Length: 135
Image 1 (cartoon, rainbow, N blue to C red):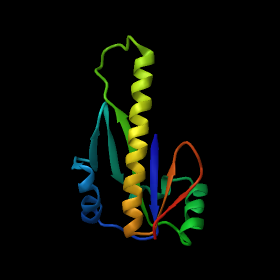
Image 2 (cartoon, rainbow, N blue to C red; image 1 turned 45 degrees about the horizontal axis):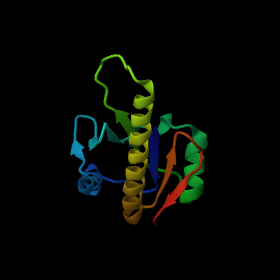
Image 3 (cartoon, rainbow, N blue to C red; image 1 turned 180 degrees about the vertical axis):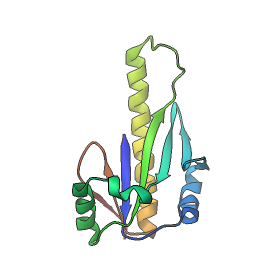
Image 4 (cartoon, rainbow, N blue to C red; image 1 turned 180 degrees about the horizontal axis):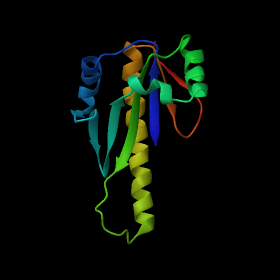
């Protein structure tokens, strides 16, 4: 699953890194990684990619924010794989659901921390609803 955090205020990479540090985020070549049991949450600053977000989603974010979003951060969960064939599909699906639930809860906590500092809304790729965060 992918979650997108929109803000009407620009946030520096240093400020985002400071926000993510209490969550155990480690900087990597593209963004930040937070290790989870069985996978990880990847956090990418995506403001340069604002134009690739469908206009309908940007409009919905603008409606909640009261102005056009100028900052985007994307978060996605990734499950660890061994590269071997999966023998027990049910166990694998159970692990994926567990990771998705853990990642979703972490995204909510990160979103709340972000919203306490900057005006923001959060959306996931499974719905079109925008959740207002803090400010």
